[in-house]
Length: 264
Image 1 (cartoon, one colour):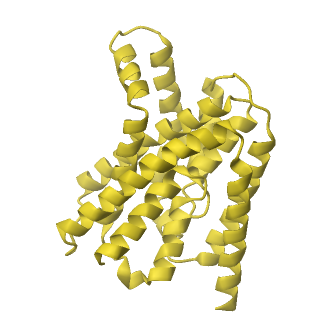
Image 2 (cartoon, rainbow, N blue to C red; image 1 turned 45 degrees about the horizontal axis):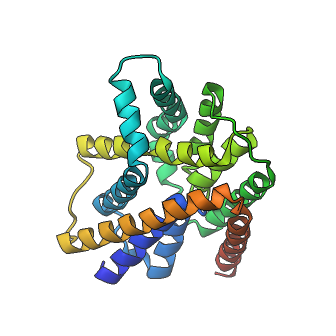
Image 3 (tube, rainbow, N blue to C red; image 1 turned 90 degrees about the vertical axis):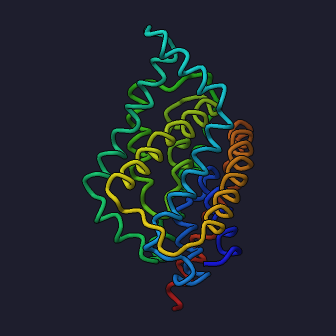
């Protein structure tokens, strides 16, 4: 892997983690375009670095919210911050269970199956189109909503299903306010990313595999900066009901991916 590959994959991860177009699906497409030899699959470290960068960009964008949550938690009262944190924990349960129980089965889906990615992108397009047609409200995410949104997040481990697209769309279709849906979607993934990184570190799965530190830093910076831009942009787009543009994009890319795989 060279510096250009690191920049490209970092930007792909940073943009698609927040934009509703599936980061995992685009990384699979990126591998197919660059050639799998350019993205060593044994290098879990590089993937972890990119995900940590996007998690950090989320914390930077929502730094005030995160600070308020911690401040409220340390008051040890049943306040709004404590309730929000409990909802985040509830939303994590489905994805955590799927990740722990079906880790090996899920890994088989990330082997360059472009046809599968294409169909999942079309499903993402449908979800975004339906959410874009929903009316905006002032409703906040409830406890039951948190679990349903968590199920969407668990399903979004499939390459081609956008995590942000699935969770925001599900939240909006449940009648929640679009801005609050985006905020909840972005904050709910941070504990999962950090938890996954911690698990990989404890399992001893992460090794350097010969990738220079400079390449890791380049990938991190690219993913972090792209994540900052995409997160800020996405919040504004959801508020303005512009998800249909991404629905069209996902549908077109999905059709191209299916056609490409079929022709080859």
